[in-house]
Length: 497
Ligand SMILES: Nc1ncnc2c1ncn2[C@@H]1O[C@H](COP(=O)(O)OP(=O)(O)OP(=O)(O)O)[C@@H](O)[C@H]1O
Ligand SMILES: [Mg+2]
Image (cartoon, rainbow, N blue to C red; front, top):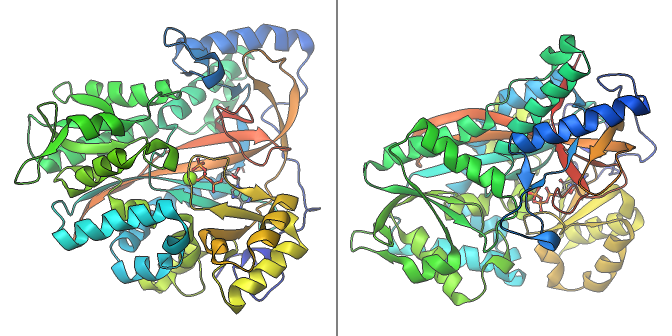
């Protein structure tokens, strides 16, 4: 199934798993490093100003002030990514969009994949119940809007891109990614390296994602209806979100966007008899969830009621509840089983997509799960243990995996998790630019995100396209690359052959 013949990457359960930790490779940067100190002192303030003046900002929890924007952390130079693999995943994105769409519409597959998980994972169970309720009542809107982001590392042992996961909800950084590419173009220009600009691929993520929302709004077919962003109580990644709003306005000045959190929707939202969703008098054509992917965003039953109200409605949702479920880690693990892709794709297509998967293992009760647990406990450094959560910071690594599995291994609680081979990306060097810290050369790894947009119902796909990319880079010592947490930062792609 997989392109490489390394046992670590073929997803075959019986073989030795996990990539060899020793296998590392250092990629050459776009320019020789380190840069002389004088050059750093000159370029960093220029790069910071460029980033800030082009809106690459955020707010942070510990210094929150609605009147102030801070610079989103970024890397000074674009990071190397192999062109062949970049082109490959870009080309495959429409197929992955279709795959996610078909998974989301395969009730039997969703049910069999999630049946154990929902017994032990309350959050997924609540999403599942909404899905079932709406299904039993009769779905009012069969058209979904997919705004996906597929994340990849380039895997050194396999020499190919390997998928970390597919996000179907709140796929963020489409806007800031485009800004970071601009910052890097400026930096290379200031460093008098204009000949390198061709290595930074064009990135239209913001325009394409917003174009997707606008197309969905057109499909809905009411010129007076608005687009609603479902937001957190406090939005830290505010620039990324606002740029989506402004881009919609730029492309279509006649379309209005409103922003509401789930608590507000529970108070302000109602359904008409014909299932139109009305918020404060506005009819909602499209719902874009930038929140609702983690339990903490549902403070009480009221927020769950709000989610149900949205799902019951005629509004086109990104994601619809079935798309949300299709994006759970458990479903992705079940899809990566040998042969399962052929349920959704032709043999040739399944072959191409299967090459992107690394080993994923079920921890469900039974001999298969027992074997996976034993394998993880013997070699925890070769794996990542994942719960059914989004937003980063939830996975376990190394000894933590061992300790945790020791506690849950004999109980169904383990069924809330999946196990995944740890992908070994190449190392490279870059300068992390972050407010309040010294800029120094660090060893880093980069994760590529490919955006895709799809609009369709069970029978028909109306729109399906690749929609830009993003690169997040983190210190090689960090397990996860959370940008707000300060381990990861925005970056852009420097393609090399
Ligand atoms: N198989 C893997 N090998 C190596 N690192 C991994 C792997 N899976 C996850 N990671 C690291 O953990 C991070 C978070 O994992 P993942 O994307 O699965 O979780 P998430 O909570 O859905 O994150 P996000 O907010 O990016 O959607 C990844 O960005 C990556 O840095
Ligand atoms: Mg995710």
